[in-house]
Length: 185
Image 1 (cartoon, helix red, strand yellow):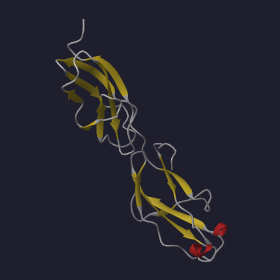
Image 2 (cartoon, one colour):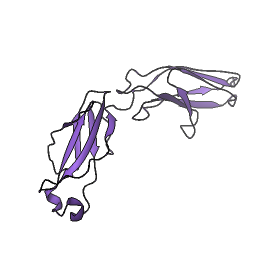
Image 3 (tube, helix red, strand yellow):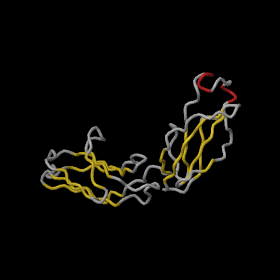
Image 4 (cartoon, helix red, strand yellow):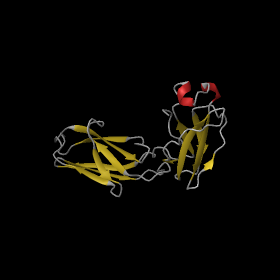
């Protein structure tokens, strides 16, 4: 799915049979799909709003990993092989970090921050900082909340960026412009 992740919901989608021969000779509009899922084996058959649909959304606890598999069933009861069982976590991107300070001294710029108040339902796996709006970036371990740029152009005003990243993706960035010391007076 291309729609944004939502904590508490897992969205699945699959490719339908391309032709009648793949559907066991059945008309394609007679094929239904079964979605099985759960937090652990054995998986349970899930109730779908429309068994002919090629997608399904399931409410699950935020941050919990669930496992899913899908198969097709033709009108004669002939079933396809199972899809691979896929682990999926219900989460969304993390919130915005709290950039507490950006300071400079002799071409070094130090960024300090607090983690976001919400991890989106999945652990923060890293932070990303940039001094060029993410044309390039530096990845910071998730346990660190400071980074020092060295060799910055003294006297230049540079905007420094920060964002947290979890398994869903990067959260919103926060930025602050800083004149790299020594600055013109």
